[in-house]
Length: 156
Ligand SMILES: [Zn+2]
Image 1 (tube, rainbow, N blue to C red):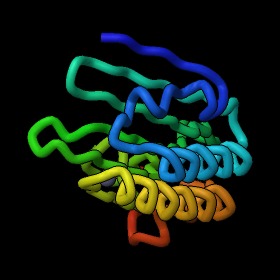
Image 2: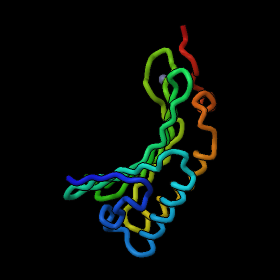
Image 3: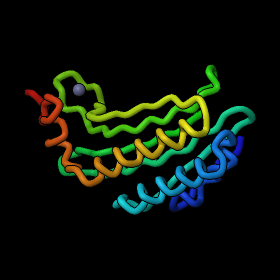
Image 4: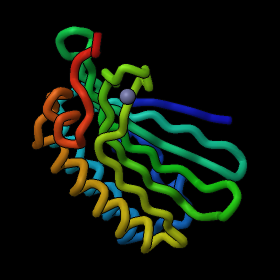
């Protein structure tokens, strides 16, 4: 297995990680990744891993808020080992404040399974637009929990 990390999507070896994505499709993925980086407010860290028949890359915007609260925006692109498809998943998650501790809750999620390079480019562009929308939206865990009907402080 090989892995690496760097600042900015240009440090991710996209062509090697996703050999099914070529030409214009590869450029569309790279451009959408740059658009994500331009909207990010953190250090622009990306990480990737590659094995013989699989690969993945991801990024996570992490923000710590008052009182042990936290906001996470994650993007993961990975090969699907059983189907030969590529899966793109993006989530916003926040700390759980329920009476029963679930640790974290996804308050938003998009997920695409892509069968070929064109589908990967389409799905990555759509996911990037969603991520940019989330980055421009509130990062306040209290507001995000309230929006989906979750409690925001420990119930005594
Ligand atoms: Zn909970």
